[in-house]
Length: 343
Image 1 (cartoon, rainbow, N blue to C red):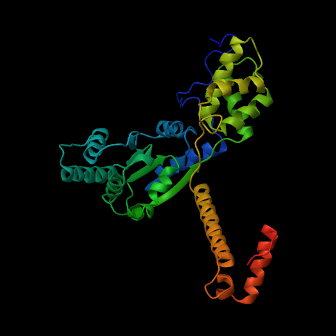
Image 2 (cartoon, rainbow, N blue to C red; image 1 turned 90 degrees about the vertical axis):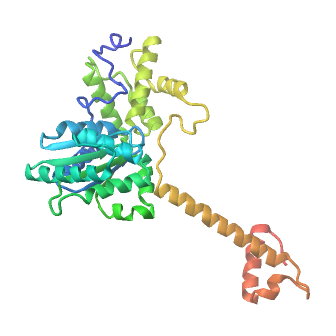
């Protein structure tokens, strides 16, 4: 609808991943290099995490397209399966027999690994959305690696998911799996400059005759509300182009971006757009802070109780329990905070 108005040959900000038009930020280039190294370097298990919308699927598509014919691939992008369903899927993708008998499947799988080693081939199992995997299925995946011919490292297993995957992996039952992780990588969002380069990259690949459709202030606003998340950048930019066309505005400024964000905002959503929240260290920090505040308030309550609750033999509990120097120190603190005498 707006393509001709802005001099474009196609929509620049489509939401569906396109491995042929991939903007590779420094973080994305590093992530793709690590994925390739995970295969070529025979690292066994690899864990890649990223928040929603940062381009995990696009990275995996780029990796798959780069694989040679010597790599047999099984990509599982919907891992909410029962154990037998998982083995059935794995068998179908790797052209192995499956009749519901796990023992026979493992024999066939082991034979496939030996044949792959003899032929100079590799087997790659990628589990996308791995943060939703049940623990028992993660354990089944780990046990598959036990079949790999000792010292020959034919099988590579990539677990790719949202940051919740790290929390899942911390379960004590998965300690044997954690000890096998050869590579970990957490994909970060775009910085401001990368957001600008990304928008220009998409416009350029859409045939834009000029690249100044978005003002610098508009791009800063896009980065602020999207927090550098490519999927949200696409949503905001596409909506802005449509709104700009409808309002006959050949140049999109920050005010128009704000108008679009208000249109896209979900009622009750804390952020202007539904941005994935980081967990892990931030969550642990908040938990520690709340615990510290709780301990402080409990201690303060106890001290107030000692200071003001009378004792049966006269005086207060504080005078009966605490040494005189401590009593004087506490009275000084109470006077500073409450402006009066305590006890």
